[in-house]
Image (cartoon, rainbow, N blue to C red; front, side, top):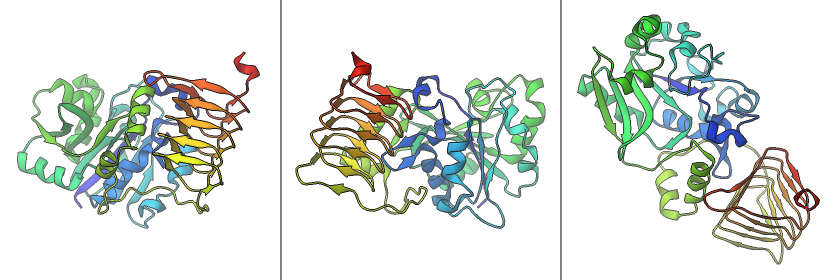
Length: 340
């Protein structure tokens, strides 16, 4: 494959701050058992890309624990494979995909590679993009840059030649541009630009509301079948856990529930991650409950996002709205006394 990949995992989204205080956007859990970065990594390997540089910012621990050496994506190779290339964000944390200041810190990754083209992408747009097809269209167009779009929405994914990227890394200060996204948005002279129209499922995750809507969208079978394709699987970190246990008297309707959970109460229109306890008499509706969280007996939750390892005490009532779901941050503990 003539394509080298840059996954810009350094992008910060202020609207997602409640979920990213202890992790990067790329390692935010999604769809019950996945992290956001799983989708772009899976798309890359499904497109035949075998050299992938992940450029994350701090805090790194959650992302590093999840992707490791890339084994779950068959990227743990003796040659090429996955490269973990943290950036210090000397640019002050510019939220622009493919920031040159960050990529420049690992210039050798580009100069030593043999692939003639580079795809610069992100982890906050969930798609099923076929980069092989996009590269073919890029070459055929003869343009300097090709940008993926869908229904007028920029998917923040770009293809250009490696030589052009290296040239920009050495001259971006003089050219007064800050990133690949910046060059494309400005339609900077003397370069030429092309668009690749993507027709499949996509979700831009840049706020709590967009995260909530995209997550609950997956309860729709049509949407789910557009994202999870049999011939282009989404890979994630493998965990050996038992099936979820549904205790007598529990009731589940229109929900996605990952392995290792125990359901004793009622769950409707919700996504439940691995290792979650929903105890007797609890009612969970239109909620996202993440890994290793506990909902105690007789709780009543609606439009709530409970991050990882949250504890919700007995009898707690929390009702958000579709427009403003309540977010319980990672490791939080909530009791009836806290809400008085």
